[in-house]
Length: 126
Length: 361
Image (cartoon, rainbow over all chains, first blue to last red; front, side, top):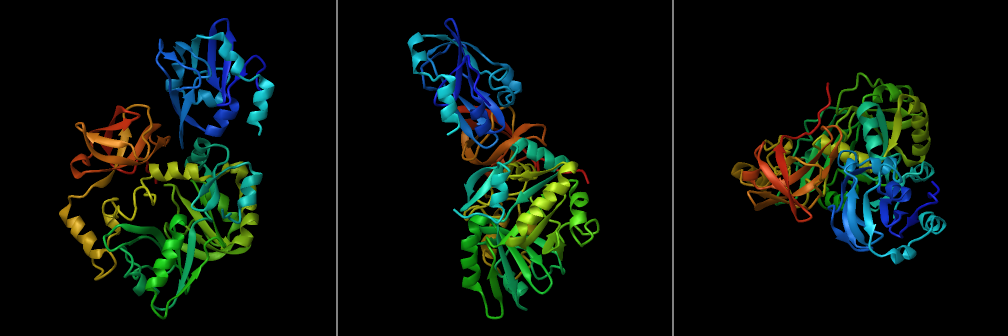
């Protein structure tokens, strides 16, 4: 799957959609495919302050537990509560209904450390 | 890393391959949950050629094997299959296996990870008059499992499958090739296991997948197999059975035949069973949505009483998270409220009888 053009990406296979100082974050199609069937997602609490590239949650597939890293620092504005009952949404719609959390971005400069779609595509297809 | 005769088939199908017991094995094809669903409702095809196949011949095989195993070998009927466990002197499990009494020979199927250890064990105890042949990695094993197994497989074999009893076998042909065809499996569903020469396996695999596709047959990996066996309450060596965990602890006392006068581990197992004071494998259902995983601590009233040995989401048990745990006897009664420590937090669990899933007859 080609990467959506309006997103930025981390090397840890997260995507970011920036809208002013709000960032929506999820994992990429490559990541969900590599993890396999996702059965549980543990997200940070709303109001928590999280730091770029640090582990902020957990994504569990049938076989494995993986850390979730945040691609940007900020304050958690919202988490995707629907994943509690339907974690498989991350598999079905990694760039849509399977989003994970929204942040108020602490430092706009951090976005410069993220990858544009074409650069991420190279990593994901290596 | 070794490869099974079906390796190229897995690569072509785009399976996700992982190292397992020294072999590059498919963990999933289309996805673990989809493959699980195929086996429960239609049928799945598994490459189990990594498992060890030893062929035993000689008049004294049964008499000898009875001295190494907890279950009875000598009482097996022609073409019968039987689950059996080899133990060490302390009663710990050396391996859990299936014996097949074939025409003039015996087939012993051992766990892939234990194949070298078991080959040494058998040879170290082998009397004169018994011959052993190690076909590990050369003979293939293809399993078809699921309610449509008879219907899908029948046109490809020359034996009548509907009349074959559970845990019995036949020697015939599959896809035109000589095969041992057994009504055995490790999923909790009806199904068959086909033992064929490795050279024949790719053609047979392709033929079955092609012919079964319209009925919903899917290639399945070890990921689905692990979920299926856990739901069915079947032990997996290295988890519910180890050199330290005895078959009595694993709830396999039904297979312990103390009427046999002597076998390795007999005294230890008999004493353990009588004392009834041992940690044992129980089934757990998690109350919440967080999966329990191997190694997580299990607590009773805040005190550690054991640990998780296997855990998974169980689509055939209400989509709950289920697990097996090795726990102290006071924590083993059905209905007991326990807690599992997951990433530092306590999560409620309840002891339930095994299996988690039983198919409707």
